[in-house]
Amino acid sequence: MANNKSAEKRVRQTEVRTLRNKSMKTRVKNTRRAVGEAVAAKDAKAAAPKVAALSSAADKAANRGVIHKNKANRIKARAAKAVAAIA
Image (cartoon, rainbow, N blue to C red):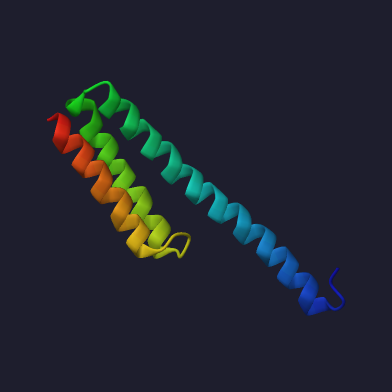
């Protein structure tokens, strides 16, 4: 429990940031899943725009500090490799 005004503000800020971070992580996770489904269906044509969307979402999350930049690069590399394998 917050004991003073600044601590109460920090609690409010943390709640807002947590929600924002959660939505960014969810966007990355959902686009990652969409790429995986396209790869599983061996549909390279459908997977290409999904990889672009995943790359964008991962970069945005990394730039905003939600995920580490190396994790974003790893996500993008794995997606590109998976699509290249079915192309």
